[in-house]
Amino acid sequence: DGGITQSPKYLFRKEGQNVTLSCEQNLNHDAMYWYRQDPGQGLRLIYYSQIVNDFQKGDIAEGYSVSREKKESFPLTVTSAQKNPTAFYLCASSFPSGGNEKLFFGSGTQLSVL
Amino acid sequence: QKEVEQNSGPLSVPEGAIASLNCTYSDRGSQSFFWYRQYSGKSPELIMSIYSNGDKEDGRFTAQLNKASQYVSLLIRDSQPSDSATYLCAVNMEYGNKLVFGAGTILRVKS
Image (cartoon, rainbow over all chains, first blue to last red):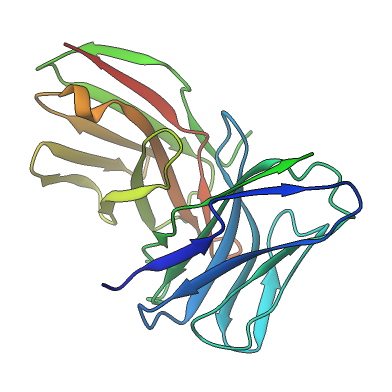
């Protein structure tokens, strides 16, 4: 089955620790995205990538880093510089279509601070 | 002014009624509009997209777009308890060519 796989489903971070969230897709989509969702709020864009080996900052990139070495994979690292990392993290992908992109989401990772 | 605004709700409707969800947006040049449904603890699921003024129907769902008023809505006919979820409006802003999400409206359908 084609889709987007995020792992782990739940993740706990200790203070000062970097953690990496995995996102893999087999939809052959060029574009991939990372969003953060806080309770009662909409999705906010962290980073996005339109093509392999290229990515752009979104609205809230500080404290996060990404890589796009393969078309299928777009891992997100939450660094120790992100002081308030507790949130629901969603990875998405799309096949670019000139502004009419329809996003397909993974199942999400809930990150909490110990 | 927020780029995409939705009433947070909760909107409560009885089973079988029509649920009306509304969304306004700030960028007059926006061309693409989407409605996503999100169950608690789950990821959003695309249920409707609309690009032209007017109505677009898909089963029990109708999306309505009025670009002059910068307003997009979602109607759910014959509401079912399984429709209870948060509905997210998303607008592809011409400025920056980015997809911006509203905070979502919580819908509760009571049987």
